[in-house]
Image 1 (cartoon, rainbow, N blue to C red):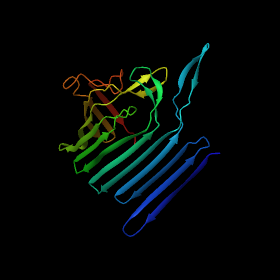
Image 2 (spheres, rainbow, N blue to C red; image 1 turned 30 degrees about the vertical axis):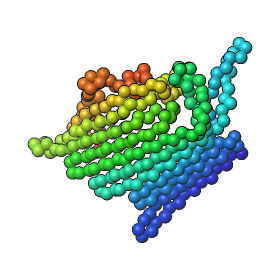
Image 3 (spheres, rainbow, N blue to C red; image 1 turned 180 degrees about the vertical axis):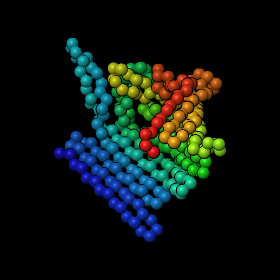
Image 4 (cartoon, helix red, strand yellow; image 1 turned 30 degrees about the horizontal axis):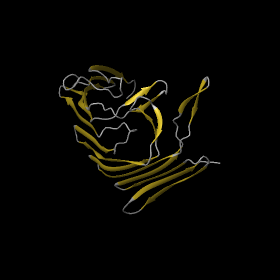
Length: 272
């Protein structure tokens, strides 16, 4: 007895064109999902509401065996994102604001290492601010993405307060070998302190921790590519700053990130 409804709308005027879509799902068990997206000229908008049953369960010992129960009520999530943008042949730039609310959310209690499911009381609010810019010139390409999060002590989101991703790329040709195309660049990713994920083999899933934070880190990669006709040779240095600023980083507790190293790749296309 589930109900599904949706639609798409496309429109075009002399000054503006765009599209919008919506989806509504209602389940017989009290679950629901409503989604609305719109893309206007220089502005995108999305709104999502979700009511779902908790997928986490608690283990209880009964007589000589274990049983799994789930007596949690439905949780509610809303997500609102507004993102104006500008686009031209050389520049693409956006700025965004995202608001998320969580009500009666269920998560694993990791503070005392019990990992028991707990249903949060009340409503939690998460705010995200940021944007990105991409610039393409004749020989240079530059990209930057920045996100700042305000999480109001939410215990079940493994998101750093500041996240930044930068790319700088330069391409050129050697004068005495014009058929050789060369490009070199760097990729940098920065994480501030954040509550990391931990893998639980008994749960067979990753769960967000709280009461514990990983140190922030900066990961820097550099690469150079050579392409001659249909053959491309690539050399990439990974995590070049390891040991210079900090000993390393852990994207997940107990799972160390890639150490400093180098990768060599060769690609040969049979057809252009």
